[in-house]
Length: 216
Length: 300
Image 1 (spheres, helix red, strand yellow):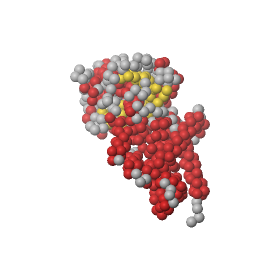
Image 2 (spheres, rainbow over the protein chains, first blue to last red):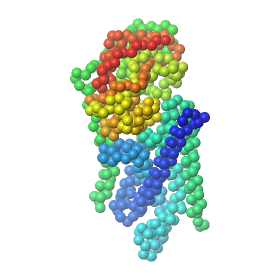
Image 3 (cartoon, rainbow over the protein chains, first blue to last red):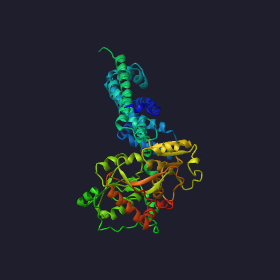
Image 4 (cartoon, each protein chain N blue to C red):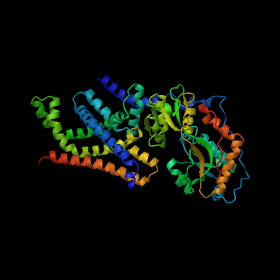
């Protein structure tokens, strides 16, 4: 169990842990922004935007994440797109998670009674104003619980990036295994690290739920 | 409107399929198909093989089948064609020549794919009779298994494009992009030379990046690299300046000294009659790297 404090393992583990957090945080940000945009597309009155939103969700939600990493890491460079490995990973993970965020948000939007939007429109609000001022704030409250599941899954999905040249926790596990430490001890510490991240995300959402709760 | 939607879908589809389309070095155009390519040797099966006092051999004879552990993902070294189930490569040839001297035909060999971490447990539990697959002899492993050989001396080397003249050895990788497997010991060995290291799960991913020019070199044991150089001949070459030393041996049960001696004898016999060199020429030799001298055996 003490392997973490032997040799220079702690520095390696810490760097992997921070890399996982950085990757997860950036991907979460991208997923949230892109997911919201996609949800807006999917409920918009413009058929082309609706089509784009649907196509994105269909493609990204139904493709295994490993395959998406492959597509980004091996598909984009031949087309002349060169980014760091971390950026590629953020694109794959963020784009994938965005499709889930979009669907969760859309379900939330659909729970807001149609009368709310109609009332907003009859007051002369534009589609954008209706969505951002009236519908989304109400939808946000109902989607917090399913959204927390999506964002707890995200850091754990980020482990796939370890196979694509991002030195995060998974690749730390690979390195320690290769150095011959006990497999059980390695997995114990890696599991602890993911637990810390997931628990923090869960707590954050619990806090948000309390803050946004309204007496009905 | 309709065209814009179609365009968006097409764009996404392109992003996904580009990987497959971008591949221009299919295995079919490898040098192996050339008419004057070296042929694999065939080995005469000894019908009178007798190993008194070897429990592993006695068990195999009773079973009528020899169970050999090998790798399946190293082209021209230890490779399994998933479609046909055929095994090929230098390690596979070594296993076949040993099997022939123990009295087993290729049809009587049952192959078992084992990755590196599974080797010691499988040998210790007698799940396989012996193992041939880039298995480095070292003292740590000798506590758990024993080794016949070495049958090949490998060393960490660099795989580069055939027209690359800038990389001539580990001293010239300063600032270059070098790719290897995630978490492997190869990373530790190349780090002092200040290369920029890229890591993928598999060497084939690294080779893909080398062919597309995104990395400058791939590093690991030269035997593995020669296998890839053979597969993509003549596009790639192995630099030929190994900077570590690994003795590949045949791994077997720790206590079966009789079998160990018999495998050593078989390796020696096939080195002497030229089978070793023929096997090399028809597999790793296709990379353009000339056959080294077969190593001297270490018996114990």
